[in-house]
Structures are given as structure tokens and as C-alpha cells.
Image (cartoon, rainbow, N blue to C red; front, top):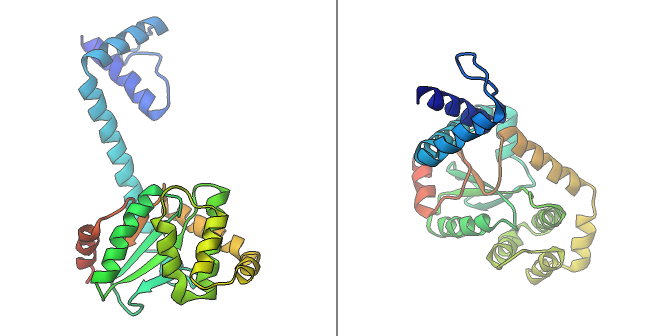
Length: 248
């Protein structure tokens, strides 16, 4: 039984880590059929143990990535890119020291859920600044949506949040036609919008945002930065206020 547990543990560890094991800890080799039989039996009889091991590994991976992100956040250049980028929309009190930074994609369902909390935060908390960072991760359509959002903010900063609300409030995916429609609804002419989006600088802005996200190790959207902490998921209103209370 000890041999079985040891071999199964090695094989399961290898599966989680992406490698392969062909021998026991004692040095005795085993054939493939024996390994498969032992692992199959062990999985059937110890499913809870295996799931716990996988979850523990995932948590260790997550903790390691967050710790690395916290270190990266201390870099002055990263701080500047996060908090002082003129292309990132600023909502709420621009002078507040309590800052929430959200990396989002207009076609991210979880971002639409997160938006409700952000919107509630802005409505209720008059001493908070929210920085919205266009981080398109769902392909060319998202890239185009991001460039349209950036162009809206450039052309009419005061109308950006109305545009953002419209984009975040729809069901399903938004495409270029829908984003253009919402931009015109908040008062930007389609001709002006298309001329702005066509400028090469918008490709560069999107690329720089993806580069920043890569340095932070972001795995998806929404991702939130508050103080020196990276939160790789959405927070509700209470969660946002709790995090903000620690930096106030």
C-alpha cells in the first residue's frame, strides 16, 4: 500500500507539474500498465485527497504570482504607468488619494458584474478616484472596442463614463458598430471618431497596456489594483470599500 501511495503521489505530482514519472522512489522501475492501474485505483479511492492537492498547488501558484505582482507594483516606472497614464480614463474625485485601478475588457462578462460595484462606489463615495484601463484580451474585436473607448476619452473626457456605462450595460458582446453607435449617442460625431481611431498612436497605446499587464502578471479581466495590492478578480461594493479603508 505504501508503494502504491508513493508511486501515485509521484505520478499525480508529475501530472500537475506537466512532467512524467517512470520509476518509484526506491529506484525500481515499473511498466506503463502498472502505473496506470495504480493511479486509476488511487484516484477512485482517494478523489478528495487528489482534489485537495490540486487546490493547494493552485493556491500556491496564485500566492506566488500575487507576491511577485506586489513587488512589481513598487517599481516607480510601473507606478507611473498605472497611476499617471494620460490615456487612462479617470472617474470620480480626481484629487483623491484613495484610488481604484481596474483593468477591463468590454466583452468580459465578469467585468460587467464588476462595473455595477464600481458604479455604486462612484455614486456613494465622493472621495475616491477610479482609473479605468482598457485591457482588451478577447481578440481583434476587443482591440477595436478599446481603441474606440480611448478615442472617446481623448475627444470628450466628460462623456467617456456615459459611453462606458452603455458598453458595460449591454447583454452579450459589443462590436465596432455598437461601440460607434454608443459614441455617437453621447455626442461624438462618427466622422470625428473614425478619424481619431485611425491614428497609429492607438495601436501603440493598446500595446503598451498589454505590456504593462504582462509585467504585472495579469491573467484576465477584471483585475484591480488598490494601493500595493493586485486583486485578480471582481470585488463588490463592500469589498472595494474594505480595501480602500486600508489605504486611507
